[in-house]
Length: 278
Image (cartoon, rainbow, N blue to C red; front, side):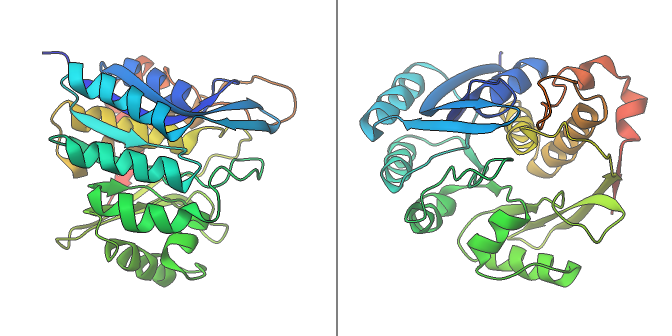
């Protein structure tokens, strides 16, 4: 049976992040992708030049149309933008026999543009996060969600515990914003006490646009195929590591996109060696 995943996120006209990155990732991993658009952005490798949100009723209608017709195995959310949209998404998910929910708490674009209104953070924490099985914050996002500054390994772990207290099943603390480490290191921590550290080689590149979207989409794809959450996270780490390592040189002088087909082109031996797991 064909696995199906739903992404609820914004559009990136540059194609490197958002709905476009999610659907590319689903396709590369053999999953049929469906979508509900939350906002249109005017965006390229140089930054976000405009944000045009969809009305909450429109987001609801898109999600209902998909969930009424398709056997969706997992749902991911990305850019949600407003408290109204977050509340609408939460209500729709609660009204269905909800598949596994993965949250990428998109707040700020690579170039610094805000993609989540300040007043929407509380709705995210109280309405949506308690419904999720996995959340994948980067360091700045985790600081907002945990209400603390993160400067050390101990801070990362403390923030993860604080985020778990919001009711989510597991958190993946992405370490790509850390400047004090030799590796790209992510921490997986679950509410039932499972702890995994995932390390990969630090790659010095500007071509990192859409990494968070792609990583969370890969987790969603694997979960929709029936893979356990910890295995899905590990496989997604390999997927995004390859996408960065074999990056595309596109655009002018901004943050270029990652290579969504890199994983498919590598052998199993190569991608197993990309990530170290503790």
